[in-house]
Length: 346
Image 1 (spheres, rainbow, N blue to C red):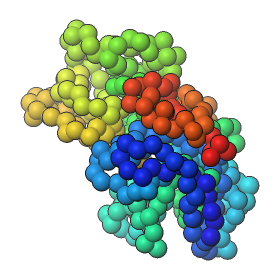
Image 2 (cartoon, rainbow, N blue to C red; image 1 turned 90 degrees about the vertical axis):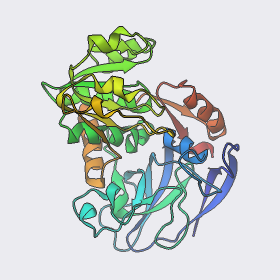
Image 3 (tube, helix red, strand yellow; image 1 turned 60 degrees about the vertical axis):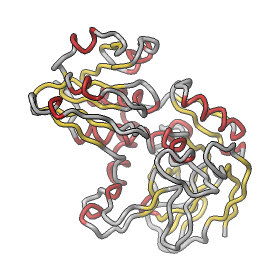
Image 4 (cartoon, one colour; image 1 turned 135 degrees about the vertical axis):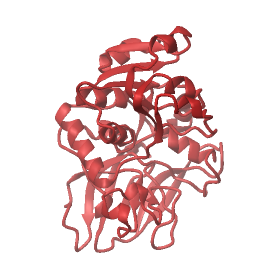
């Protein structure tokens, strides 16, 4: 067994504490990853606070994990000690259902195993990346390209793939007008990726406070949604809208900005339901969709794409002692644009 240092939470809204957690012995297809950096995702906060349902405590969150392979099982062929590697939101799936066979493990029909707050095939609770080590089967470990710094690569394992996947699926590219709702941890990645794909990108944010950043990331236009004229000005203009906001908004206002036959995709996951009026969809045959992360194959494609185009998130590296403060700041949108924990401070 491998003992790992970690930060754990014992109940909703409690503070993090130091913890020692046990990682399983390596099976023949397992990889032992020494974690160097772990991103803080809004999903960590929702889960830790019980916003999406009761979590299992003690809880070690974290599914944006980057580090160095320390040891591999006897039959591992994809990795060797010293490799730069990462782990995202899931660590296992059934591997045999039609979705898994199609490379869409995130939609495993039998349910994939989450990196934390899940139960693995051995019946043990999974614990995430706010720790020094993790053991994962090789099929769910990603290669991190050499030109991506590990601290900046960590958030790509969730924020990167969560935005890349729908942009890829709905074919953002030259000639397409893409709107990104919200310029936070997800939103700023959506802007960078959509721009690199060749799309014409517009940011829709409550205010113009981050306008300079949005334009620097690749947006060609930036509008404040608190301005009532914004929705009149932009009505029927977009081929694709990516909503990254993790709070309840009037989704019907944003649906009105789509052209005929186009789609608004929700990747933000608010705790409250969103109210969609059918007449926001029917008149222009619009679609309202949702998207999770990507499968392992697409996640590796995303990492390689980001390396090729030198796309990296804007990060603020913090100590493990600052996680509680970081959670509060994320909820206040007081981060530009992703917190990353330096796990050497655990």
